[in-house]
Length: 73
Image (cartoon, rainbow, N blue to C red; front, side, top):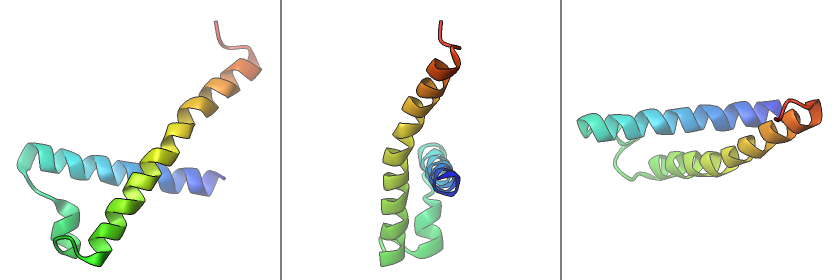
């Protein structure tokens, strides 16, 4: 599961950097590298979106670990 978590986090970071570049500089790095809405660009966007949805589960997992250890106050 750690490999999947790492991959999801990496994709979320790539997506965040890309959105930051779009917001600050109107520069879409993914589209520049792979072409504007090419098949590969769409796959990258889809994977980033899926990784973002999967990453929501990180919130619940951290809370569950803390409750098991008794760290929650």
